[in-house]
Length: 382
Figure 1 (cartoon, rainbow, N blue to C red):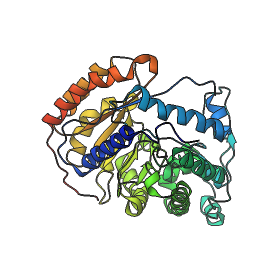
Figure 2 (cartoon, rainbow, N blue to C red):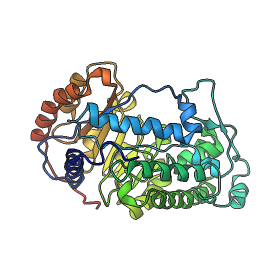
Figure 3 (cartoon, helix red, strand yellow):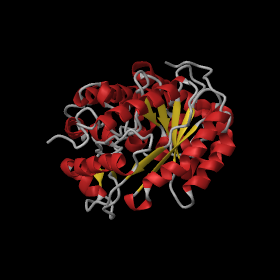
């Protein structure tokens, strides 16, 4: 059955406007206003666990929320999208790690037991084969969901790819966090061999996901993020573990592997909830992300440092977690970051919160922010 937005001329025109806005943002062109990304979540009877274990239920919830953005927040600059998700440890599952589910049905799955050990890491890594996204772990189900979601979106609602984490995040699943930190110093060579194998799987998973979605035109990014990245900027990586180590470690064990994704798919973005001890290292590599997506809860205190390190190099999607006035929060962010670094506010509300009124209240700040910005990028990265 066709989507209710399929025949809407306004939706198609508005979708084109929003995409042009983000193309200009990534290009560093002067904007009349900073994008305001307000999303809407409608109440659902399905728990997080039910959605992870049942792709049809996950699609139903995702589609309802995407359509709700058009209905309840028509002035938002958000490009409604859907996120097919089989857990942030899906690459680890392909290597043989098993999922477990916690007591709460609103928790995502974790890893049952580590499958590698520090003591004989070189030998274990040598025996480890690179998995197949079409066969191993939760990845085949992830590909099925990508196809399912993309078909339901009918080319008007893009889909993210899988929350594949990549790099040191996957090592933390396979080896354990404590052992990962020790491996940086005690087993760096074996760790690089392992990261190389993970990277081969990660890139293969992205390629398979793009194919399952029907091409790059139907995806938001190459990772889980359901923020739409323009053509040529689809590459996105996650590095939450970098919140726990320093810039020298990031430069050796994270940045080169991120760059491999950026080189193939575009240097679009990097996720770390925060905090950000490696903030300067994020953009020190020849292939650095054009954007960061951060949680305000864990990264708000880093804004003054990010203002210095990201100036004329990258902008921020900052996910607001509530607890105070969204309007007061965004004005504070603007006062801290202008004129050096753009911050796009991303916030999710319910229909009862009057999303359209929130858009209207944020727009004057977004317009003032744009007038105060120094536009342009020091590095093209396209």
